[in-house]
Structure formats: C-alpha cells, structure tokens
Image (cartoon, rainbow, N blue to C red; front, side, top):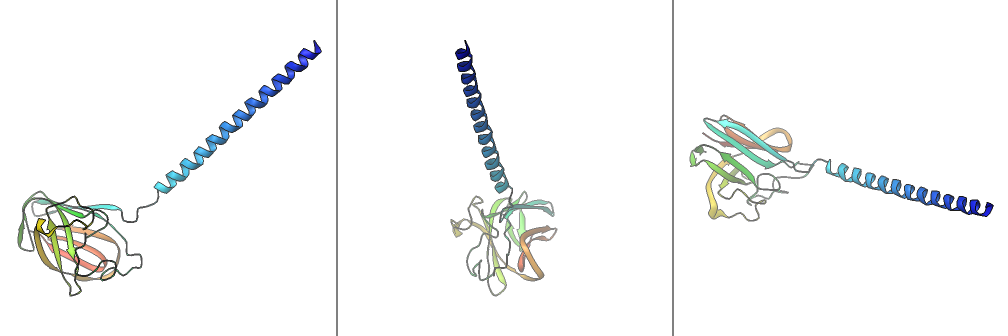
Length: 191
C-alpha cells in the first residue's frame, strides 16, 4: 500500500510540474505577444513625414477644397534643390494635390469649369511660376502627368515670406488661394 501511495504522489507531483510548465509557457507567450503588439502600435503612432491635409473655403459662390500632402523643410534647400526649377511639381507630397470647385470660376482671369483637378506648379527661378489644373485628379505625384490633359495653365507671381514656413500649407481666402512653403508664397487669384 505504501508503494502505491508513493507512486501516486510521484505521478501527482509530475502532473503538477507539467501544469506549471504549461502555465509558464502560456504566460511567456502572452507577454511576448503583448510586447510585440505594443511595439507595432507605437510605430503606427509616429506622425507621418508628409501628412495629408485639406484646405476648404469659399471664393464668391464657389466652395473650394484643396487636398494635399504637407511636407516639411527640415533644413533642406527646397527651391532649385529638392524641387527643381522648370519641372512639373505635384505642389505637395505623395499623391498629386487636388483642387475642387463646385462652381465655374475664373483663375487669373481665365475660365475653369466646376470639377476636380490635379494641381501642379512649375517653379521658376525668375519668380513667375506656372500653375496647372489637370483633368486627371487621381495621380501619384507628377510621374504620369500629361500636358495634353491640362484644363488650364496660368502664370502667377510668387512672393517672398518674411519667415520660413516649415510645413507646406494652402490657405483659401475670398480672393483665391495660396501655397506657402519655405520662404515662398504662391498666390493664385480666383473669382
């Protein structure tokens, strides 16, 4: 009988050890998954380098919406450096900037029908830039830009900013809109 009890106690002790090992493995696995999940979520929480932004406003009776990616200067040379002179530029970051109006408008005195357009600029060292409203609003950058799809091109005079505008921003006023970035403001008259 004593032998039976001894064997029974030994089996019971081994079962407890197995349960304990299993429990420790489960807790370790859970902690590992928790740490990995927390790290992934922390990475997602970092701000994007060029976050998507929207500017909305009214010009006359027209509702204007501009969607754009907003990059930062980050100490870089923007004009003639990062953004080359005399080349079509997406006027923001990531997807091409879009300009949408629910009414026909005049841009720098020229007609632009109601609709949604991609908006591009051609920066020039001279200070007179070309603003482009293209009929293909869904574009990534200016990589597949086609001049044949332009709805309107106008020349605009840039203005210097008194202080550096770190993040690219669009402002809509009752006279039109402007892009401000680095030390440059690009006003576009809209009526």
